[in-house]
Amino acid sequence: MRLIFLLFLCISIISCNNMKKVDLIITNAKIYTVDSNFSIVQSIAVSDGIIMATGTNDEILKQYNSENRIDLEGKTILPGLYDAHCHFLGYGLNKIKRADLYESKSVEEAISRLKEFSEKYQNEWLEGRGWDQNLWTSKSFPTKEMLDSVFPDIPVYLIRVDGHAAWVNSKALELCNINAQAKVEGGKIVEANGIPTGILLDNAMELVRKHIPEPTLAMKEKALLSAQDDCFAVGLTSVADAGLQPDEILLIDSLQKSGKLKMRIYAMLEVNNQNIEWLKKIQKIITPSLSFRSVKLYADGALGSRGALLLEPYSDDISNIGIRVLDNDFFEKVCEFAIEKGFQVNTHAIGDSAVRTVLNTYSKYLKTKNDLRWRIEHCQVVNKSDFDLFGKYSIIPSVQPTHATSDMGWAEQRLGNERINGAYAYKKLLEQNGWIANGSDFPIENINPFFGIYAAVTRKNADGKPENGFMSENALDLKQAIRATTIWATKAAFEENEKGSLEVGKYADFIVIDNDILNIPESEIFKIKVIMTFVSGKKVFAK
Ligand SMILES: [Zn+2]
Image 1 (cartoon, rainbow, N blue to C red):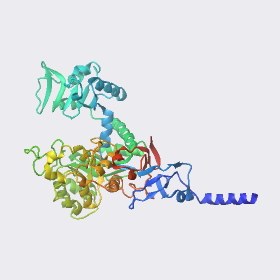
Image 2: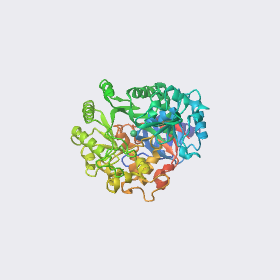
Image 3: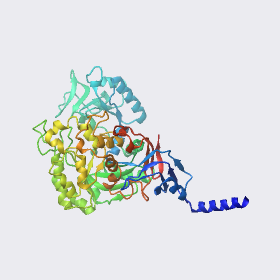
Image 4: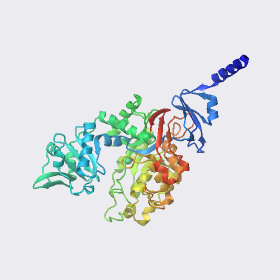
């Protein structure tokens, strides 16, 4: 008996010695690896933030042990999700700088939200966004007096839901020397008996806005950390910020190095004459958490405000073709510079004319098929004769499927029944290179990436409308939509060897979700909740 016991002990010691110790083992999960076969495994071993092995429970437990073992009881795992086009810092600043007044049901409710916000953040100016007097009983514009009684000493600036009016208090009017007699081109100071009421329309808003101090670096730090919390809670472990300034990129790098910021960020530098000078002195920055290797340009405006540049006039405004934002010489200078420096050029283009200009200009520098991965952000309206240029010059469409379902109510009025066929054509765009990157453009759209996956697949809004989907011939299949939000998003950033799928040697960035995304009705996809989020094998969010 004793002998048998000794023998058993020896065997266990030997086998224990053969076991590799790792930092984390997950077992009993349904893990969609999103590798090239979309393989499913049960278990995963992680060390030093890197995936050491994936396989069945037995395969992993035979080879690895860990003090940190999580039995997931059959729950689903996906790679950490990636928003390929958003405004991460902008979202955070909105959150900490501007009180959320959206859908407030009365002046009292708006004011009570403002009070709560001002106590929490104590900014120099009290700013807010999203009020809409049409939701209030009186339906008339609010006045400065309503704010003065609660906020006599701090200037208040509150932007209306559509961005075309501001509601301010007396302190703000006084600080900015506003009097009702001033004439403003393209704007109006609303007055009663020769005295400003506290409402400023369009360009008159600028009279106050220009006095609001730019956010300090300390505020930006707060904003980044606050945006990070919200991202982790919805399963985003990587984001592409589509437009940052030099000091913001350096701030991100230093916050990541200090360990405060764990979000992985692909930073696009918003390029102008001044930033080009900075760019000349600096090289790419590639760290485990930051990729700075791209510039961001704007070719036109947006479709909703008829700023998107079209080849033919707007169908609902025949005197208008939109706004050209980008100077051609400057565009060429940036492209030339990017070629020399090995940077990606990522250009916002929404209208078919803007998309065509960008395709043609890129093609001059890219010349043929290539692996430079220059991107067009949005590609919202593409002329049917231009689609194949994406493939011909390996230009990457970076798209936002929730734009399709947000705009579907009015897009056809703007574009007409012919041109609409080349709009929000994500499947057709995917076919050009065989892959596509998926983003949300938050805070313009919701931050939750499952909304984007749902919209890409169903082409419906959260109410399940329209019943057959909006131009559903351009829907992606679910695996394509998941790839576009994981591995293909990394590819659009040259990061596909480090993350985007759960394979040996990659960062252990993954999320545990409350439903098996590939085995639920499509209508349930946007309701998926994240239970846990891991970055480099460390839990950064748990519900
Ligand atoms: Zn954007």
